[in-house]
Amino acid sequence: MSLYDILLLYLAFRAKQVTCDFLLQPSWMALVKGQPLSEGGSRALFLHAGIHAAFTFIVMMIFAPQFWWLSGVDFVIHSLIDKSKAMINHKMGWTYKDNAYWWAFGLDQEAHNLTHLVYIVILVVGSGTPLH
Image 1 (cartoon, one colour):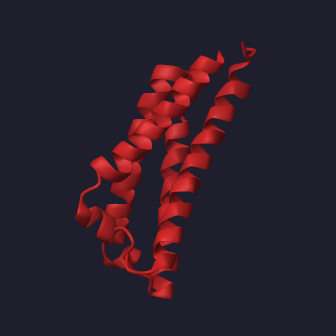
Image 2: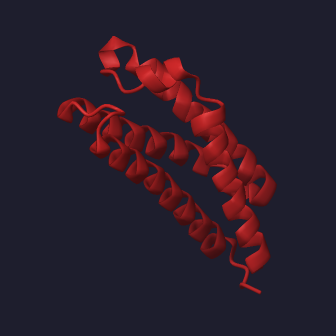
Image 3: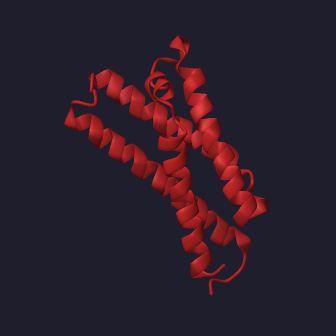
């Protein structure tokens, strides 16, 4: 795998994150996914994470089909990150008017970014091909 391939893969993951978290996430999903699971939050959260998993599957099929299973991992990890952020915001009573809400939002996005970086490392190490 070349450094060019790694850069393209990273950019594909960044495009996936922007597309799934912002362009394909309607406001009802963003608002409801943070609610308790018993109040409908699970449907919105799992639908959102499923969209991410589907896009991760597409990225894997383009770059490294043998790692298709990372889409399932992404479903779980994305759900956990988003639910954790939502629970903290809810417990603390933070809204978009609070600085802490935006700190949590930024940390959430960075957690997703780091998750994608780990996927790239898995692909590079697991592919068994030297970097060139």
